[in-house]
Length: 92
Image (tube, rainbow, N blue to C red):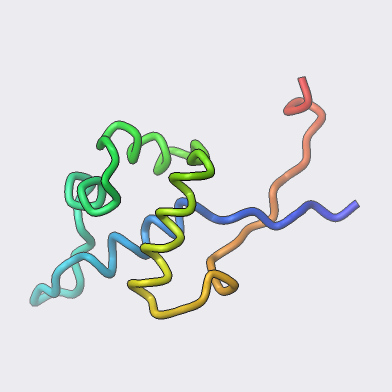
Protein backbone atom coordinates (compact mmCIF):
# COMPACT_ATOMS: atom_id res chain seq x y z
CA UNK A 1 0.00 0.00 0.00
CA UNK A 2 1.35 3.41 -0.97
CA UNK A 3 1.17 6.04 1.73
CA UNK A 4 -1.01 9.03 0.81
CA UNK A 5 0.48 12.43 0.09
CA UNK A 6 -0.25 14.94 2.83
CA UNK A 7 0.23 18.69 2.72
CA UNK A 8 3.70 19.59 3.99
CA UNK A 9 2.46 22.24 6.43
CA UNK A 10 5.95 23.14 7.64
CA UNK A 11 7.09 23.83 4.09
CA UNK A 12 3.93 25.79 3.30
CA UNK A 13 4.41 27.96 6.40
CA UNK A 14 8.10 28.45 5.56
CA UNK A 15 7.15 29.55 2.03
CA UNK A 16 4.67 32.09 3.42
CA UNK A 17 7.24 33.39 5.92
CA UNK A 18 9.80 33.73 3.13
CA UNK A 19 7.41 35.63 0.90
CA UNK A 20 6.33 37.95 3.74
CA UNK A 21 9.96 38.57 4.70
CA UNK A 22 12.27 41.36 3.72
CA UNK A 23 15.27 41.63 1.46
CA UNK A 24 18.53 42.29 3.30
CA UNK A 25 22.04 42.86 1.97
CA UNK A 26 22.84 39.22 2.73
CA UNK A 27 19.67 37.73 1.27
CA UNK A 28 15.99 37.37 2.08
CA UNK A 29 15.07 37.31 5.77
CA UNK A 30 11.84 35.37 6.42
CA UNK A 31 9.10 37.00 8.47
CA UNK A 32 9.17 36.11 12.15
CA UNK A 33 6.54 34.08 13.95
CA UNK A 34 4.72 37.19 15.23
CA UNK A 35 4.37 38.63 11.73
CA UNK A 36 3.35 35.29 10.28
CA UNK A 37 0.77 34.66 13.03
CA UNK A 38 -0.69 38.15 12.55
CA UNK A 39 -0.90 37.63 8.78
CA UNK A 40 -2.72 34.32 9.25
CA UNK A 41 -4.81 35.79 12.09
CA UNK A 42 -3.95 33.08 14.61
CA UNK A 43 -2.31 33.04 18.02
CA UNK A 44 1.45 32.82 17.90
CA UNK A 45 1.33 29.69 20.10
CA UNK A 46 -0.93 28.01 17.53
CA UNK A 47 1.47 28.91 14.74
CA UNK A 48 4.42 27.57 16.74
CA UNK A 49 2.61 24.24 17.25
CA UNK A 50 2.04 24.01 13.50
CA UNK A 51 5.69 24.75 12.86
CA UNK A 52 6.59 21.99 15.33
CA UNK A 53 4.57 19.47 13.32
CA UNK A 54 0.97 19.69 14.52
CA UNK A 55 -1.59 19.63 11.76
CA UNK A 56 -3.92 22.63 11.57
CA UNK A 57 -7.70 22.23 11.85
CA UNK A 58 -9.45 22.05 8.50
CA UNK A 59 -10.67 25.67 8.63
CA UNK A 60 -7.18 26.93 9.57
CA UNK A 61 -5.66 24.81 6.82
CA UNK A 62 -7.97 26.45 4.29
CA UNK A 63 -6.79 29.90 5.44
CA UNK A 64 -3.15 28.83 5.19
CA UNK A 65 -3.67 27.39 1.70
CA UNK A 66 -5.45 30.54 0.51
CA UNK A 67 -2.56 32.66 1.82
CA UNK A 68 -0.02 30.39 0.13
CA UNK A 69 -1.90 30.54 -3.18
CA UNK A 70 -2.28 34.32 -2.98
CA UNK A 71 1.39 34.91 -2.17
CA UNK A 72 2.88 32.39 -4.61
CA UNK A 73 0.41 32.98 -7.43
CA UNK A 74 0.03 29.21 -7.75
CA UNK A 75 -2.98 26.94 -7.61
CA UNK A 76 -3.57 24.78 -4.53
CA UNK A 77 -2.81 21.81 -6.80
CA UNK A 78 0.86 22.82 -6.53
CA UNK A 79 1.03 23.03 -2.73
CA UNK A 80 4.06 21.17 -1.32
CA UNK A 81 3.19 17.62 -0.27
CA UNK A 82 5.01 14.78 1.43
CA UNK A 83 4.43 11.10 1.92
CA UNK A 84 3.37 10.18 5.42
CA UNK A 85 5.02 7.21 7.03
CA UNK A 86 2.50 4.61 8.01
CA UNK A 87 3.32 3.04 11.32
CA UNK A 88 1.63 0.49 13.53
CA UNK A 89 2.74 2.58 16.50
CA UNK A 90 0.56 5.46 15.28
CA UNK A 91 -2.48 3.20 15.15
CA UNK A 92 -2.71 2.95 18.95
